[in-house]
Image (cartoon, rainbow over all chains, first blue to last red; front, side):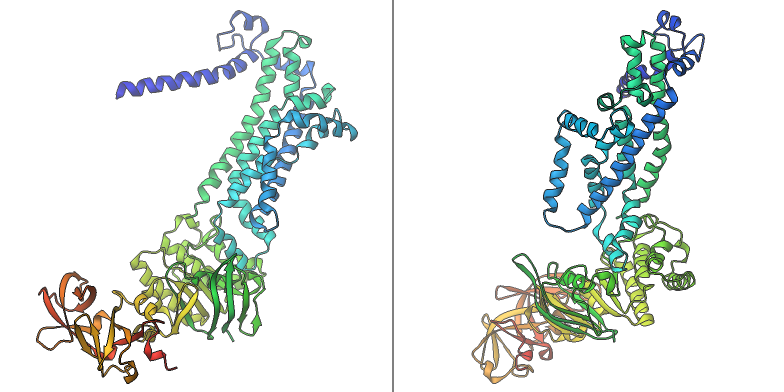
Length: 271
Length: 357
């Protein structure tokens, strides 16, 4: 029994290290001089410690601008997707209209359309709008997402019906039912879906690559490409520094919002 | 005027009709109980009164207002749900005052109503608690409080006590009576529990398969059931029903017969007809002497504390007789209290008492 437990722990530790190693590798090498990085790649403790890469990064690319672009794109997309998904899910859950089920399944089926199918039509439309090389060109085709509708519809269907009926009997308007009851109860689902949308948009590569031309309008994943391609040379410690920045921002946001996920989950105890 | 009038109410889902031509007048300030087995349509009726379920045809009047097609929020009714339907994200206090606030009741009035109802239902200590931190009984009281503060003339309750344990149910019943005494609303109460119905109702509406079987006081429903269904549904253990034929002023059952010439609903015209004879277990006596109406064999006994139920086999059927003590003689005579014997029409199931009317 006891030996089993140790073996089990050992296996888990190995897996954790396998998962963590690339991250630790990136963090560690971002604080090394390029020469040290080549001579002691495996050693995770940077000696000597340096911030040189971060400073160089700042000089090579418009780092603040690029981070801001990525942040704007990811947050605007997330905000719109959540708002549209929430409203659609509310209508699909609480309103009665003809072809409701058909509408729902039609919307959900768009999840299965691959990006490559819509890529070219979207590109043509955006170029018509003259939004190529603008963050708004990246954002515009991503204002709604059937996955969000699906997630929030599921969450709303789990709200006991009498709860909504109790509010209806008390003369609460549909808008206030949505705002005062449905919204706070599905907040955990909203938060987790939002985190997911944010990370997807933050890490998105292909679509921004098609849209964005100038460095001033680049996003972080695009900038990262500069340092791993021949164009940016072979200075991989700078690439690691940029990787760390790219990882750190969603991680910090996650840590901040994680509190809300746990809080709302524990307060929605309905029998 | 706080009466409720249901006129020719019908409700169907597609081809299935769940309520057929229902007519009922609920009086001002009355406590009316809809009682019936599950699936009899009692909750549907309540939900139609509340406006949560549209009627297929017919009219609903609350007092002088016709509300048949009004949305539930405009009907000014209060409702308590079976699972309480408290807002899980609001404190007890906010659960109770939320609708008042949204409906523009000012803060002082809100606080007054809140304090009064919290005091009445002994919820003062729980003001700031969330529903998940309350016991079942406390949640139930919060649900009552929330419905009460509305000061609505109509109080609709959908099996509000069925999630409570037996002991709490008795306390909660008293609380309901207390609230009714204070506010004199018209109570419409749905339950499948006959004890609750008896204890709370001014009148009971017994329903089966979407049709009213009987509307009367608890006493009449119990002692003068209108038909076989009511007779069997009310009472625990239920009324004994024997199938036989009347000949020469006697009810012939198997190879025995019972003199029924002095049963009030008996008439000469019944001679020669096949009928059901009904009698409650507590209206029979186990005869120690030779003076008995019918004879049978004791199969088993159940001790209920105050009384013992004897299951007795007579001519292939089983009947139950209540007696204060256990009598475990195999063969035993049973004496009927003729005042409480009912005769039912074999075809319609109707009690002959109600046939002439």
